[in-house]
Length: 409
Image (cartoon, helix red, strand yellow):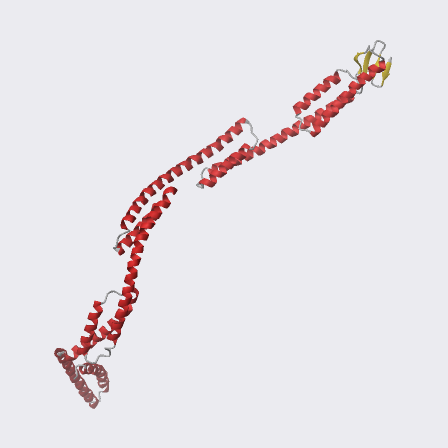
């Protein structure tokens, strides 16, 4: 019989292993010596040690799933429990138990990690849904559309939640995108309709502008072009492929008209410049008539100047007030001289002036006699009162006498 600390071989060739529960039969050995039998089963034990060591390493250093780890542990435990090896099998069971604890701990950690990741994914998807629902109300069509596409890519990169939660959030997310797409489609459909209406309006405006391009009715046509431009701006933009062509035709028609008008106006301005020089010379000639000596000769000379003035055409608008003002000043001076002469030679006015002067002179003489009489009688109060009245009548008499002098009397 042969033995070692963990096993023995009896006389019949039966191999035993010592455990905490007593000896257990390992197997039967008939092919060689007892030492060879123990050595064979000890090697099987060493194989289990190596296998457990490798599994411990895989559990600690790789992402081996808890399920696969437990399957491997159960497989090794079956071999240990079968007692087909000689060695400290209880120590192997202890290592396997600790390995189970490690796997259970790892399973719990991963469960918590998955729960955390799921919670983070839920919050992330809820945030995406909230943002998508806000974007669904946006009118920033390009920016919001690009952002929604980016949100879809972000959603795809997030872990799935439980089916119910994931489906509910995806439904809200998808509904927000659909609502935005529907609003955007309606907006651009309306925009297309508006642009088509603008195209029709601008086609009409172009036709009107082109029909006016040859007009020589400068003022009304220029005013009409201003009205057409206001209508053009109010019409809004047509489709891009039509807008530039319509504008070029519209602008081209205007350019033809305004170029022709500018050419005519340039000639007119040159002519009016010459007219201004002639009228300035006449104004200077008229001003030399002042001061007036012989009214009749002055009037005849001014009439001649004015006839030549009227024969001259228009002058530049900005120069008109000054040169006309010079002529009007001479005309007013002649008119004032005529009025003075008329007053001087008017018999009725002279008679009225003489009558008024006589009445005032008589009143003054009478007041003076009354004042003298009051002084003589010692009635100074009455005399003072009458002198104040005399001052007023004397002032009126002086004025009437001055007016009478204008008649040469």
